[in-house]
Image 1 (cartoon, helix red, strand yellow):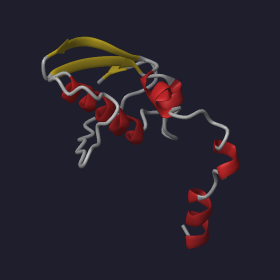
Image 2 (cartoon, helix red, strand yellow; image 1 turned 135 degrees about the vertical axis):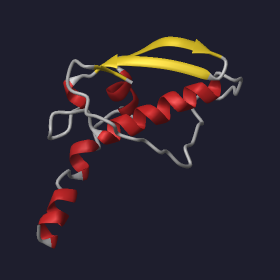
Image 3 (cartoon, helix red, strand yellow; image 1 turned 30 degrees about the horizontal axis):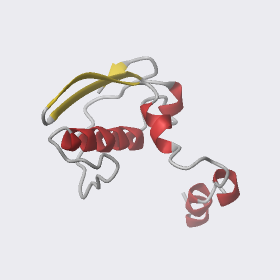
Length: 109
């Protein structure tokens, strides 16, 4: 792929097309199908039925969505040990090992 094509791919979404989105729109987009199966001190176990809105071009769960879910649920686990500010978690490093693809209507996490 030539450099101009790469540039066009990265710039294909114009700022005006996303400026109208509500603040914090990403969380409901990601977490709309998330269920908390178990929560205890220092541990949060979740599952979700994979919605089509989180699929990549290969029709499997987008890796970025997976990493964002790891970030959000990891922050919840930190909060479960007594930190009082649930919206202030900041990930310094996230390591996600992708072992297999998840597809629409699969149950994962």
